[in-house]
Length: 111
Length: 119
Image (cartoon, rainbow over all chains, first blue to last red; front, side):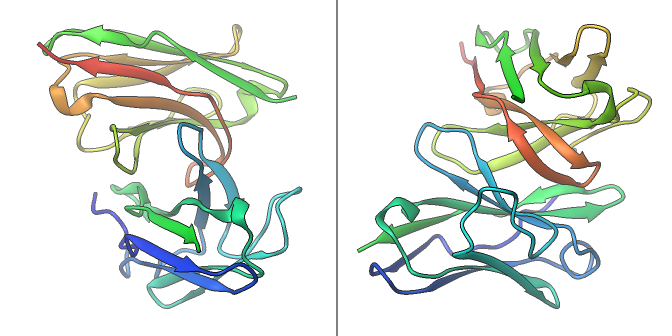
């Protein structure tokens, strides 16, 4: 199974918006609306922040939003706050035989 | 409150075996797909295995196929991962996670258990 492609790092200033991309293939992101995003702070378990492309679980800030175009999914965080500094992972259903595939992760730095 | 608590990790020599457990509470365990996801030190997340709510369907990543086996005991609300023929590259924190379905959407995670395969 091949990992989805994410930028290694992104940064932004408090109050700004940033977008993290996640590029897959026709077999995973391009074929299924089953993309999720996870936030992981150091030495903590991941936390689900977006599911099925653009849905937020209860309790997750509406500053987080997701979208998809073709083989690329995106996570946008608006109104950056210091607490958003973390690692972010995308995930997609990969279809029969590939099952579930993660991106390599993106480290977000709030300047 | 949903809780997932892993146990069974530890230090093991390459070629050895280990069995991880994940005790679930706070939800109807048998109604959910359950997954194992691992994270090597300083690396990203890697999906490992999944099992259906009734245990009839299982899948494994190519990297562990033939060596790892996922199973569950719904009477005891417990998920397992039997790990055989361990390799150095299996060294990781292993998380159990509840999935909304077979495809992922991991809405609850355990705290993880560290497996170290080294001579």
